[in-house]
Image (tube, rainbow, N blue to C red; front, side, top):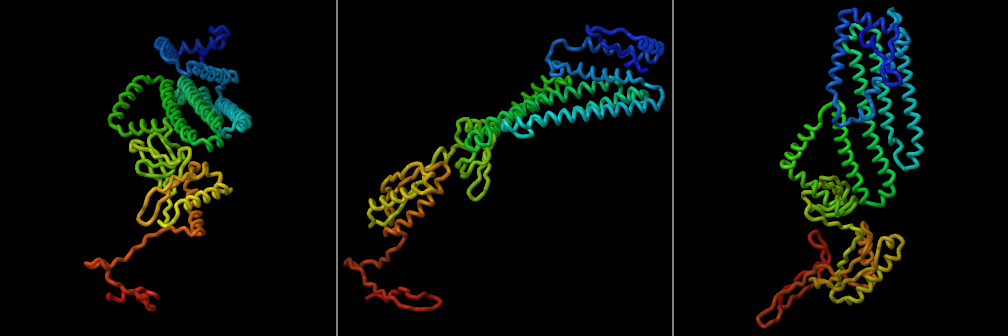
Length: 474
């Protein structure tokens, strides 16, 4: 019998060692009489003593230590070994094969039960997810980890069965102690992943519950900040998971943290533009200068904000072009749709028109527009006429503005222009267009030379019908 299992002693209820049975005493005697097994047994005792002396009494407490994962893994392997010993290890090759088949069947049943339990609990959580308004697959990753843990432990225990039954070559390739350590590492690994996956799923569940679809569609600021917060938390959790996993494998993470600090300082000096992107973006988002779906002008580009990260902003122009602008390139933010908008009207009429009559027509068009079912809800206030703004070359310019909902100024403005044109046509108000006056000069006495013009009707390729031609002077 190999030495590890020959001296295995189960602890009693008081934490001490139990008494050796006669069979175990006989095996211990056989082990000590054999020089090779005795040497291996003494070597194992020395390694156990060294491990006890060098095990840290203080230091950082690992998750696996806090939850006694190593003890759990040891108990699983020990109970499984006791189960195999209880069945009886036959020296007959056929008996060993039969016992291997029985152990494989038991492990298969255990994996199937574990998968069924995971699916059952996952299904029971679905009504709660639906009631809280979170995704139907939320927290399912934890049960997937449970399934993979079952598969991993089944493989390890199957290997342990092989080593127990067919020592020799298998014992030289991998020992029982190595399999026990592998079981401890596997449990620690899955435990850490389960803890951080649970934190990530809880964060997403809270976000989905309190910031559901209806609130996201109504609050652009939430829709802007929530993805940034999620990405930041994902980065933090990923880094923490990596550090905890390294500590679970007894790797000192303090030199890594110190090296990361030095590396971060070097990056800060070498990538000042990148740091400026983050700082400027953080300031812009903190002061709520723009949000997703706002129409803004930044960096000389105008468009709708489609995506915001901590480093850049994406705008989609009216023609569909997507502009990507780093925050470091933004010095001025022109938000065209902050809370509400104004559509400016600059109407030019002929100099002969009565400006008061023109203003009355504009107010009538505004009243008609606000009373319509389609455009009335989009206009927040009556038309504000600012008055005669300028005397242009061929027109008197009257300026006015209408207050609209944030993203509706262009739609309301186009309809306003259409109805103004129709109103002016009905009232006979002239909208001037560019024209020229032909001047033939003056003589020394201040008289203009006569210019006779006659209309001739000519049909041909080179000139249309009714061309005005100069007949000549005098």
